[in-house]
Amino acid sequence: MANKQLTEWDAELNQLHERNGDLGLKVQMLEQELKEVRRSREASKNSAPTVAEFPEPADLLNQLKARRKKSGANLADMDVVLEILGTDRSEI
Image (tube, rainbow, N blue to C red; front, side, top):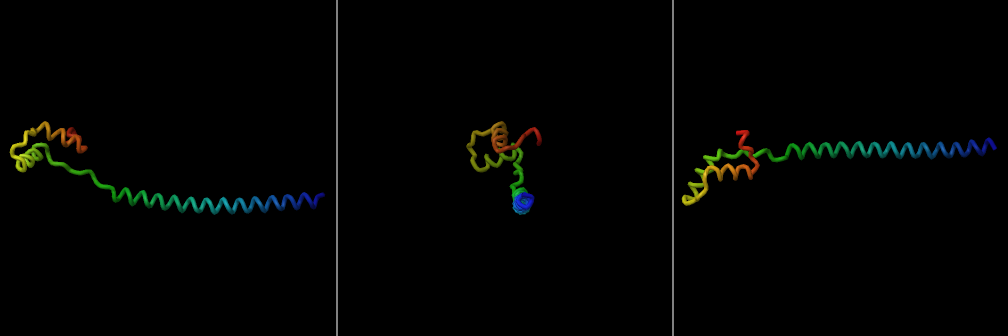
């Protein structure tokens, strides 16, 4: 009976070692995947476009008037256009 119990424990211990080995391998794979994701994220961050710098509303209006002499746009319109493009005029 003791031999049978020892054999069962030995088999169970072998299964635990296999499982532990599988888990260790999985941890290594996940660590590698994490490194790749971090590298990819860093590369994406570095290649992300920078915030565009827009001209002052008056300069933009002058450029528009130079190209379209009969344009009815005014300075307030240029402010709105720049807001639409993502510029917070209060920061300028």
